[in-house]
Each structure stands twice: as structure tokens, then as C-alpha cells.
Image 1 (spheres, rainbow, N blue to C red):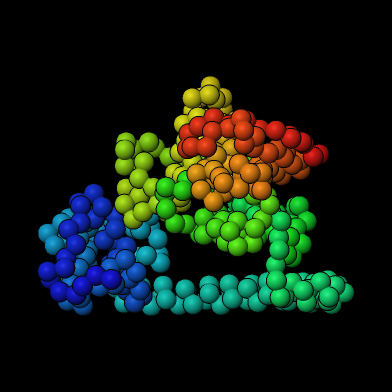
Image 2 (image 1 turned 45 degrees about the vertical axis):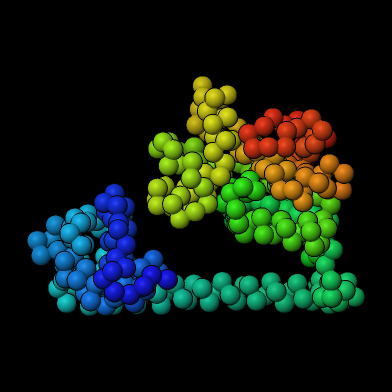
Length: 342
Ligand SMILES: [Zn+2]
């Protein structure tokens, strides 16, 4: 939390101010300002006054710093309340907003009616029929698998591989990535720690998939010099400007490998290559965690890759050859026990 008062004013690099301050100004109109919640009311009022666009120039000044409003904010009706200086315009926008939300709420209710039916069906046909099993699960879980899959709505592992309650601890993130140990805390390695050290899972399965938007984002990102090597920190977000870009940058080595090996291929083919390369890089990254590496060397845990192609509905499965693969980021890997399910 930032301290209140003039002395706490955060020196904002002009490059950062151009896109960050407009978000602050606009969000505050809704009483919500997560990044700069410590700014005083007078500071905010000053910002508002200076950003009232008297000539509709879409610019402002904060502490003497000229602020430009990027197109994404200028054109976004939710992030652009100040653009409606005319109260009638603002009233019209508010009315339209309410009507649209009522419509969306009805759609949401329909979704929940169907969801309720699915839940009651699960209870009737699964939970009550296997009540003894579920009573045991209520006391303890002992999954054999830890699964790391993409957050994509089309690739739910329970759906395509039939994992039942209690069979797999799962983490789903953008592009099914495992950051290296040295990048620090993330939701993914917190779940890994619990799965490996507490639940004692015997297998970790990283599942990638075709047409992964996270991998496409990674390959489309402009290389911006050393700033993009910053990972998993506020600075990463500042330099890269997007939570998604900051996250998928964890697979930067997969991107570099793809660019060096598959540069002559089309963008789609490069994505396909990178989708699989990043899975193997995540398998190597798993070995940077001491408690995983120790178990892997003793063959107490196996590391597997999987690739789901939902255009052809095929599933490739393989395992990392621990003895033939490196145990450091950027190293080489060998795979074994390959299979294609079609
Ligand atoms: Zn994906």
C-alpha cells in the first residue's frame, strides 16, 4: 500500500505514464483504483481536473507529465466516462449500460438453470450411486496425477481424458506453462509443491493443445530487448504492458528454439511446433524444483507430456527420459514411451 501525502508521489517514467495514468483516472470514476489506491483525494481531483479534455484532445497532465490516452481506452465506453462531459450523453450511456446488463443477466440465469440440471444429474447418477467412494474422498485424496493444462475452454482434461474426482490434482493456466524454480512463486508451483510433497503424486502430466492462443501471443510478441527477460514481477508487467504477455514470456526459450528451427515455416506451423516445444521446456523446468528432481532421479515420480489436437481429435503422449535429459533451463531433452491415440 502506498503512503498518502505529497511526499509519496511515485516517480512515474514518462513511457509508463502514457498508458497507466489514464487507466487510473477512468477507473476511479467507478470508485475502483487497484494500482494507486493510496493516492489522496486531492491528488485524484487534480488528475481529474487536468484530464477533463477541454478541447477533446484526449490528453492530460499529471504532476507535469503529459499523458496521452491510448486508442484502447479512448474507444472503450467503460474506460471512458470522462469523454461524456455532457450530462445528457452520460445519462444515455448509463441507461444503455443498465439495459445491456439486464439482458446479460437473463442469459446468465439461463446458463445457471442448465448448470443446476447438470449438477443434480451428477448427484443422482454419480455421487449417490458411488456414495461410499465419495464419502472416502470427503476424508482424504490420493491422486496419482498432477495435471497442468491450458485454461482454454475447449481442453478440459477431465472431459477429454476422463479424470474422475480424486484422480488428478489440476492446475490450468494460459498455455499450460511451468515457470522455472528461480522465477519464484506462482499458482502453478504452489500447486506443484502440494501435489508432490503432500499428496505424493507419482506422475506429472503437462498437456498442450492445438490452436493455443497463449502460444500465438508468445510468438507474436515483439522482442523488446532485455526488458522482456524480466519474469514474474511487477517490472515484467510494466515493461511488457500485459499480464498475458508477461505470463507467456515464461516460455521464451520455447519461442527462441522455434524461431531458430522453424523460422522457414508458416506462422501456424511455427505455433504447432512451439506448442509442443513449450511442453518439453515445461518438463525440463519441472526438474529445476529440487523436490521434483530428487524424486525423478529415484524414479519416484515420472514426468509426461501430452498434446491434444482438437481439430483431428488425437492425443499424443510421451514421457521425459530423465537420464537422457538435462536438469537445467535451456538444456536438451530426450523423450520416450511415445504414443498416438487416434
Ligand atoms: Zn492454450
